[in-house]
Length: 197
Image (cartoon, rainbow, N blue to C red; front, side, top):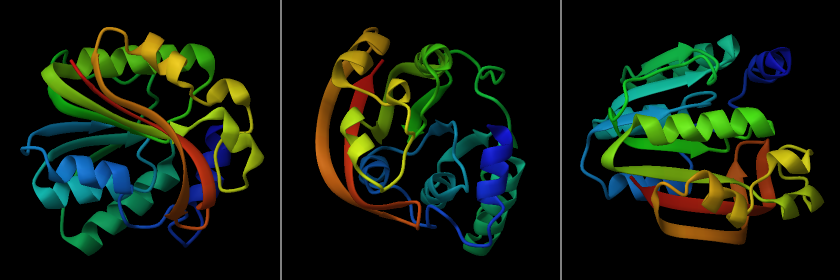
């Protein structure tokens, strides 16, 4: 899988664009600046945006090619977010250390998903906010991106179970039109979650 992502991110283009995810952007702009953790941040569009707002950013992805693109984008935008190559099952941050953890199209196999979501909860400070946007199972009928394995797609019940220790503020499934580079483009069925620790 790592080879797949390295190859995908090795393209010259920013395959998911250079603008932040729109849901993420709107949420972050309304929060006081603090510390944010961005797992699976790919080419760095969300990390760079957060850094431009003044957030202390810790971003990572397991693709070295993605990190190169993220650094190029950060340099272009005049910011310096902290970005590492790391696997989520190995990566650790201090417990209760982040004001925000954002999981933007961070899809995992079942067992790894549970680990990733437990880590996100652990990393959040009390009162910290989780921001999640991902594909739901109806996305299998679209060609606008996402995993083709239904077990890697998220339902409301699944997210309620994974984040039962948080206070869920928003949880909705919806159909939208994505315009995030060439690989997230067109009609999409997504799910959004906001939850507070």
